[in-house]
Length: 153
Image (cartoon, rainbow, N blue to C red; front, side, top):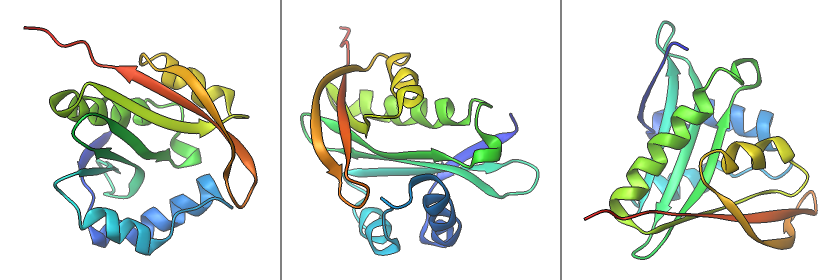
């Protein structure tokens, strides 16, 4: 895996939007939604994974951190680079940021996406509920998962 992580900028949005369509259609975020997220750096932490050789953005992820909890807002890796550990690298970076800020991290994942649920379970997430019709355009349900941070000291 030859990628490096860096903070997402508005210059990354054209490529992020291509990946968003590839990975999440029809339930995609809009460019405006990403611009709004990037405009809130005090509570948002967005990253891109770029190929170390070409500089191409091959993945991205975002965290929303409030006082008592954080939410994994999004995470995605282009199809031809999946199963290389890029998603795990992105998630681990978000979790490290969350661990500095809050005691719990939540997320929603499609109920019919067992592979992604298993990915999150390997990082300590557990299902705590379901949201019917959470993804409005596809009508898919979401599984709500949480990871509690163990505080030391």
